[in-house]
Image 1 (cartoon, one colour):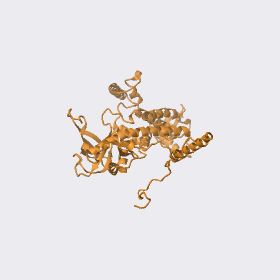
Image 2 (cartoon, helix red, strand yellow):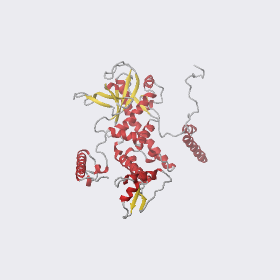
Image 3 (cartoon, helix red, strand yellow):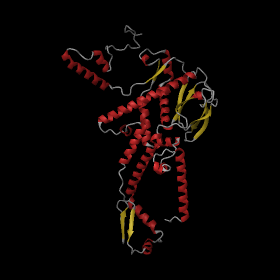
Length: 447
């Protein structure tokens, strides 16, 4: 191996100084390092980026196991079942389906909700995402929607492929500062960028915040993900180097390297390559002999530190940043009660997120009303089922406990629960009657 000369050392030193200067300047203008002692260079020394771009977030989701799992777990829980929209408020849910609800259900089908869920997934990765609305009005993507048409399908778009290209500059306008045109970069089958299409705001619905100062869902945990990658890669590299059995050959001072090189028929400078060939053969075969004369061969093995404590600390940081219990995040079921409580907490978090999604779904319905896909209605409400709702077994256990309490309380001559309350707790109709079949009339005959 050739030794670096003074010129090489000077160039490397200058490049390092320039890199640190850029890092300090970036941290002074936009960094968030809390280490006051190294405030100007802390993140550069830790290996944390000053700015997190969409490409970095997308790469983290695509190649990072924890980030990928976290996004999919949240989406899988939030969209375990699809929502539905009713006319009126929650008190009107039990009423008969209205004509408006029937028409809305025909438009907002299961396929539309699946595309909405995919858009929600892409929004968690890239701060925002877009839903491209395919409408059968025979107009170009850059034209306003013709009223009275129907929604054919919805195509989710990544934030990296959908950018605002024009804005409303009229300060007196209600849409001041909002995009008046979007540009969508299609992706070809070979993964390369295809044509760029101009899209009218009528034909796109944005999930999330497209502003430059928006904070992505994965962004607060990004530094911890960087540290986790170091732990995973560093520990894996350490195990690999130990398994490779790099050999150290220590010759006695009396060894004449000229004679040793002549034995192999090479020059002294080429002797290192012969030793490398011997090391390769040693690591490749099971029964290989390494004869030595005046030399001691020892493998270069280092003690590999246990990565679990460092990994666990960063995992807890990721868990706190994403508000997902670590047991749920990594699928570690240690202790039935602890795991159950973590799952209930995660379900409650996703249920709360569903409430926030309800506002976006209402905005989506308002957008469809505005472009004439759905008829307007006075009041509408987005409904979800309860993620923490009792299972059938849990409902029967509750009914059993209520019955046992009644048996105990009968000693005083009075039951605590009525029979209809126990039936309701078990998940059955309170009066025991079966619901009227749609194909039967009130007399029980066929319609």
